Image (cartoon, rainbow, N blue to C red; front, side):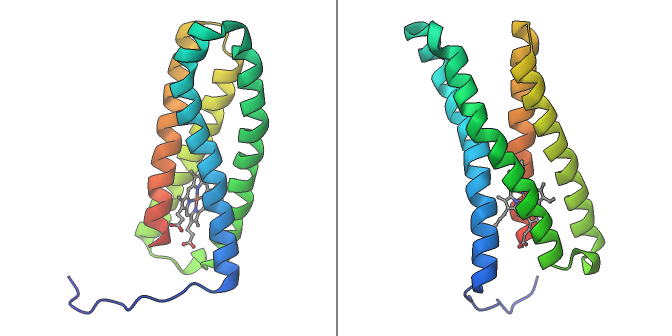
Length: 142
Ligand code: HEM
């Protein structure tokens, strides 16, 4: 363990823009899924007829956020010179990319599922993969 702590420093403007967009998109994608998941039981009880249109309205926000995560994520790969990264960083990045795919596919399957069990399982898998991708993102940022 190093005894010399690096001193705090401010990020430059482009880094602030890049990471703010990435984190904002993660807030919408991750936070929206968790929040909607928490609201569904109440909606189902109080306004079951509104469930489908609420889910569609959420999808119109969530998928552009997912696209923004990919675009700003690719921007980050270029900005942090990932080619020169350690093998540990590359391994974490590879796992994160697999989780991003699982999160996207899980969410897509959830939206199209016709049985309650598939809908529940895909929602659970998609949300878990998303949260894990977020944690690995924090690890990548160092
Ligand atoms: C479910 C999708 C994703 C989530 C929830 C997510 C979340 C995050 C979070 C929370 C951070 C930490 C930001 C910080 O601490 O300032 C981060 C960093 C990062 N993400 Fe993502 N991310 C996602 C998708 C992607 C994709 C698709 C890529 C690449 C194509 C990517 C590449 C990166 C990189 C390289 C960093 C480190 C940036 C740096 O060190 O400046 N992410 N991510």
